[in-house]
Length: 206
Image (tube, rainbow, N blue to C red):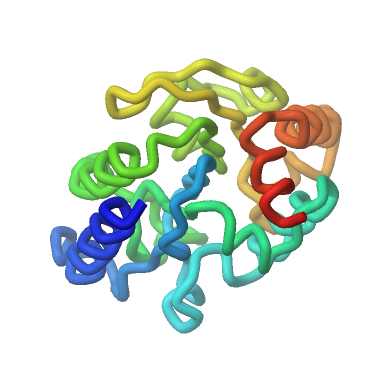
């Protein structure tokens, strides 16, 4: 455990100093350095996250953590028990047509080494990809309807785990607030609640 903790500290120090993507706006944002059996992967920080120094710190985060509260874990506990990462760790900037810019393939590739290091270190039992960009790193996805609500065996960065895809909790999206998204989200959360890795973090709380 002590070796893993040191490796995590070294990884986080290197991550904090990353300057691989000149079009991205820092700072680098990451979750708490917890050695967790669960890895959550978002898309990229929004423009507010840099000020708070944590992922899902604004409106979308409020929705996301309400989902997890429904199955027994509040925001503070989730942040302490689950390693939170993202496909890209810096704010990509605004899209001139509205919303945040989607990271480019080159930027995703630049950041993939950080995810590789975290997979190697954590060896998570369960991965929670949030939103189509994150889901697409693990599974082929054209429509959320086809992937949300199920448990998948995955091999990600040469590590075998299970994945439960979740929709992005953006306020701009109606998918998770209308059918069939509502029912599929409920199914995903029920599947998550029953997963051994989730039960483990609940047990650790109690």
